[in-house]
Length: 380
Ligand SMILES: Cc1cc2nc3c(=O)[nH]c(=O)nc-3n(C[C@H](O)[C@H](O)[C@H](O)COP(=O)(O)OP(=O)(O)OC[C@H]3O[C@@H](n4cnc5c(N)ncnc54)[C@H](O)[C@@H]3O)c2cc1C
Image 1 (cartoon, helix red, strand yellow):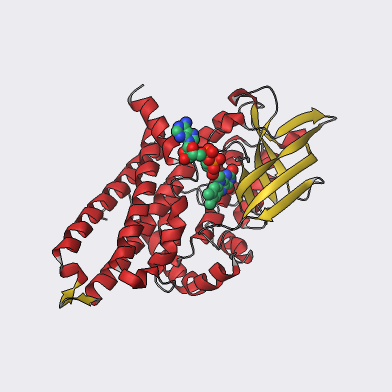
Image 2: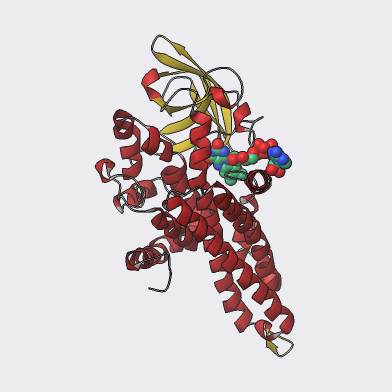
């Protein structure tokens, strides 16, 4: 056991997962990218293998494991080289269902959490609106009480899994203005008045679906409110910690794959009589890159350690998300450059990753928002 963070059980989990990803998923990556969506059946496959409920209680079909397993899941899933799969699955396990696990009623857990863990139901998280992204407290989708129901009106955009979700964990305004009026409500997508708009064409992560959602007098029972009315904003901010660690861990996993690609290509390709990695200009550039990658990984593990020990971790998680998600863009650019013209060709992994990571400074809180959080804590 080399790591202070990972024990033998974690390492075994990583090994099993890596074999599964390389044997069962990697061969299909190009097909899924081309199709613009990974197969829906994979939710059930992952559910059966237990990967959709790693942290959740066994009572609802989960594994009752620690957050380190989620970190490993993220680091290893990206090896399939179709990042959209990781996005779709982690939206299901970390982003749309954590709030039900933490604040949901037993009935909500049976109805929404358990089938999400087994992969029978697909979940999406609906926060972002056309005019309110970073400013979550400003959101305008409204839910009003009427005869034992919530009646919901509004729209959401950029929703991962949105095109095929069975339910949406929705942030809606139940009263007034600002953060205090936001609540979280579970909305089945077969409810009357719910519709999916156009499937959004994106720059990368081609195998995950991203959609606009519309709510027109959508009625759901008042019992679909998660936790307390008006506390949704604080739940979202709290649970963003896990979501941001997911992004940081994806970034670390991708940087590791890119490093391996750089080593493979850089050793094999000769320019002016010696391999690329024998040229000092590249040796120094790669040495800097290896150092920064290690810093990003250790910062993520440090943040995860604080989170799992239930210590305040908002600043550390934001630092890990900011540093890793900005660094991965520079690493992708460097590795593409090292490949010369080949790096610009679709058949090389770096080409796809270069596009995919462009969104890393945007999703789950932008880099500017991360800097705001860090500044608030560090400077006051
Ligand atoms: C691939 C992808 C998947 C996504 N999946 C989901 C999902 O499943 N569910 C969901 O709800 N959302 C999802 N999103 C939306 C994402 O969370 C938002 O795009 C993000 O929060 C930013 O919001 P915005 O796009 O409205 O940008 P804006 O908030 O309009 O920001 C525009 C620019 O202004 C900057 N800015 C904002 N506030 C400040 C400030 N205070 N100081 C300085 N600069 C600032 C931002 O950093 C950014 O550079 C996804 C986005 C992408 C790209």
